[in-house]
Length: 142
Ligand code: ADP
Ligand code: MG
Image (cartoon, rainbow, N blue to C red; front, side):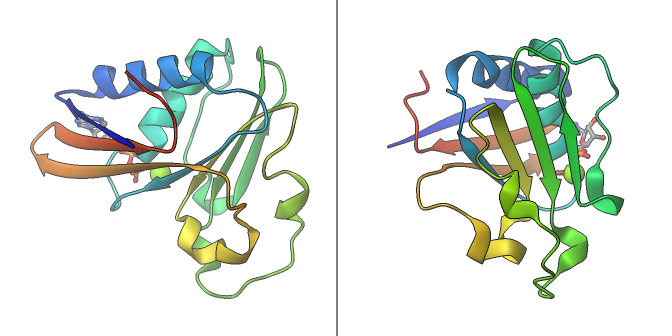
C-alpha cells in the first residue's frame, strides 16, 4: 500500500519526519528516493527533531554516513551518492537496520546489495516551487 501526501513547504516535509520518528519501530530501514534538492535531507532533519537530536543534520554526501546517538532512538543517515557504483566495502552494513534505531538512506540504488528486502520507501517528487509529492510505501501511514 502507498500513501501520497502533497507537502507545500519545508515545514510540512519535516512534519512527515516527525510522524515517522514516532511511528517506525527500531530496526526500520527507510529508502529516500528523489532528485537533488527534492527534500530527502529535509525529511531526515524532521526525524532528528522529533528524536530530540540537537546536532545539526547536514547532508552526509561528503561523509557517506552520519550516526546520531543522543536521541530517543539512534539515527543512521546514509547518503550513497558519492559511492556511485563503486561498491566500496566501508562497513555500512554494520549500521544499516540497527536494532537500536532508524536508518534513512539517500541514493539507495548505489548500495543495492546492502538494502534489506524489508524496508520502507519514500519517493519525493518536485512538482513546482515549494510543492513536493511524497509517496510512502511499506508502512501504514494515515
Ligand atoms: P535532497 O536531500 O533531496 O537533495 P534537501 O533536503 O537538501 O534535498 O533540499 C531541499 C531543498 O528544497 C531545501 O532548500 C528546502 O528548503 C527546499 N524546499 C522547498 N519546499 C520544500 C518542501 N515542500 N519540502 C522539502 N524541501 C523543500
Ligand atoms: Mg540530501
